[in-house]
Image 1 (tube, helix red, strand yellow):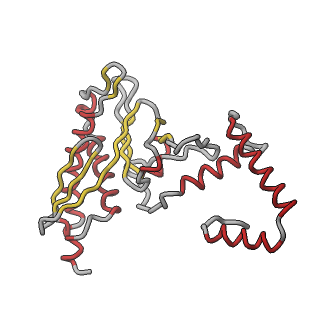
Image 2 (cartoon, one colour):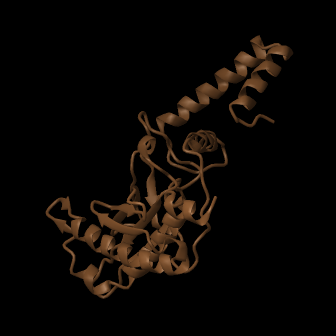
Image 3 (cartoon, one colour):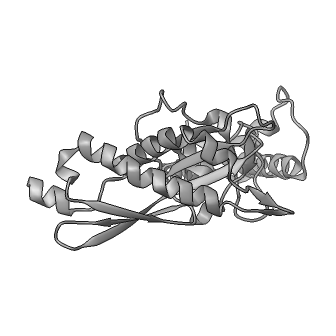
Length: 249
């Protein structure tokens, strides 16, 4: 691919991630502006001002990215709320869109987005708001998946999970992990492992109806295989699971 083709192709996701990190750094320096934001009105959370400030910081951050990657010098961006919705305009007049997710809370954990419609590889900027006026606002940026899956005994729900996101699991601004793609359905394997971990006798956690369900499923699978499965059928089933990328030892 020529340099011209590279300039006029969509901005890589890894660059969007770097843009998110630079945006978070700039946002972290806007302590006065963050303190002046109206974060809540009654029971409603108002993140409009936060989104506007973050969009401004993102546009400033793009100039930093362009200095680091001069081939994008002729690529311009505009950012719009809610979150940071980015429109890239290229030298040939073409445009593309991308997004940086925004979250804010006074707590280090909070409900995330419904996982079935979520791009878990997108950048997430989390603003941890202080509990007192004397404390600073703390900003972190990671890929979304870094902030979810709080433990190895997470519950799954009777609908598509909406995993909590965890500020503690995110990168420090000056110590960020490299960009890494995760498959969209990795959450399924995560919750399956959590279900089995929760019923291990050595695991200490608050019990749930899901634990009883997993125990019954495990018992039924074992009994069915012991009573009804031939060696040849076991080999067939093992092969089919490996085709589905499920590891069976």
